[in-house]
Structures are given as structure tokens and as C-alpha cells.
Length: 315
Image 1 (tube, rainbow, N blue to C red):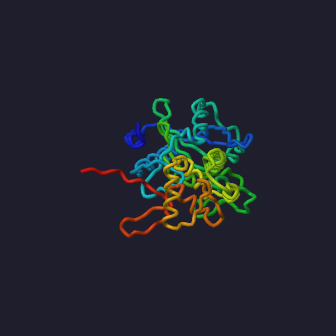
Image 2 (cartoon, rainbow, N blue to C red; image 1 turned 180 degrees about the vertical axis):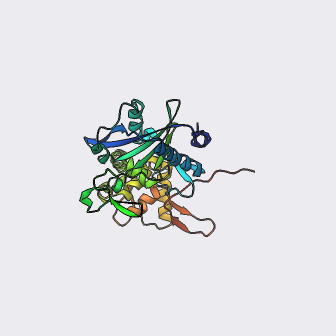
Image 3 (spheres, helix red, strand yellow; image 1 turned 90 degrees about the vertical axis):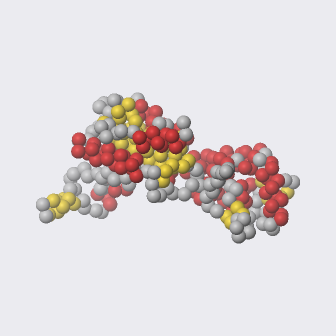
């Protein structure tokens, strides 16, 4: 089933009478790998209705879907991006969630709320989880004393001091939806932060360096790895290059060399290897992403941030 078909199925779901649960997610690192702990938080009926409405409203407002990629732009105006949940840390979250009982696996005290990294809104039909909404927690999830702020409630034309109360806030939006093994992303930035994509991109970069050395792709690969480091902008480029895989295509590399010579791009090759220099590094990464494009209309060349191939139309 395609992402569009799954998206249409999500849009067609009747969730108006679904049961609602709220759960918090805590994260801990083990050997630099993220692991998760989930606990349910009991809520009253009024809050259940508000939480359900948040998800239903976001589903209703979404009107188009495209596959997520590392270099895709932030979705806007009803757009969403889709990615298989197993390609993200949400695969771990989903596996844990399936084994929990919302009436038994609940928080024990307020400290568990304070330590939470994110929360999820779960909609069920006949006890089966149908849709999950994920939200990374903001800094002001819990008003803490060390922030130097005094939390107040304006009630009956006066302020009341809430210093002794456990005051939390739920957002009116979510970062992404989980449905039928796909994540439907509303905020790319929040999704990548919540799912620890920097660590994933660092891992992809290391895999790319190893592969590039095995196939003798570059001269001076150390310049590349040192420049990239843990810089997210460069990590995104490397992850895109690895996913596209043009560097594995000998015809692409041959064309790269020839076009660079014809258009005087100044990129050197040595024994069929790309010579990396500080000056030409960005250009090399752009070309390996296939983002140096030519306009037939103006006969100009452009470096672009994101590309989308056109479908082949026939009469």
C-alpha cells in the first residue's frame, strides 16, 4: 500500500468515538543509543475530548502527503511528510506501547512527569490502537522554581499563586501522527529532534565514509569528515548523498567528471577519484546530491536545496 493510500485511509477513519489515552515518554541513553520508557497519565473526560480534537483537527487540516527525505523542506499549508516508523526511533516506542496497559502502567508521582521528554495521545477503537499523536515537550511543560518565574492563575478577576500546584501545559498541536506503520510529519524540525535524527545522520555519515574509502571515491576524504563533524547542515547533505546513491553509479561519476571539465567547475579528478579541497567541498556535495541543475529556459546552472523529479507525462 502506498503512502497516499495510507494517508487517504487515515483521512477516512471515523475517530469521533475513539477512546483516548495520554502517555509520557522518558528517554535514557545506553552506550549512546536512545532507549525509552512509557507511562500512562490518567486524564478526565473533558481533557480526553480536547486531546481527541487536537488529533482530529490536524488530520482534517492535512491535505497532501509526500515522502520524507533528509533534504525536504518544512511542510506547510496542510502538507505532511511520511516515513516508515521502523526507520525512526518511533519503532521502539510503538513496540513498548503495544505491551502496555493504560489502566495498569501509569505514572507513580509527579517527578515522572518532570523527567518526560515527550508525550503521546493514543486513540483506540475497540481496544486497538489506531492513531498516535506525538509531541516533544517544551521547556515550559513544568513551571520550575529555578526558572525564577512565579506561576499565576487569573481567576475571578484576581491572580492566584500556583507555586504549590503541579502546573503543566498541553500544546494545541502535535509534531507527527503514527498510523498503519507510517509517521505523518507535521513539523520536520520537531520530528527530527524528537526522534534523535542527528544521531542517525552521524551514523549514516560514518557508513558513507567507510563505503567511500572502500570504493576509492575521494582523495583527501579527511577534509570531508573534519568539515562535516556533527554539523547538522553537512550531516543532512551526507545522509542525502548516501540515500540517493549516485556515487555508486559509474556512469554518473563519468558524467560528473566530463561536465565539470566542460563547464569549468574547477573540480579535479585523480585516477578517477574526486579530489576534495576546502574550496570545492560544498560544490562536490551539491553535485553528488544531483542538485546542480541546468535550466533549458535560461541556459543557466543552479545549485538548489531540494529537488523533486517530474513525472513523465504522455499524450
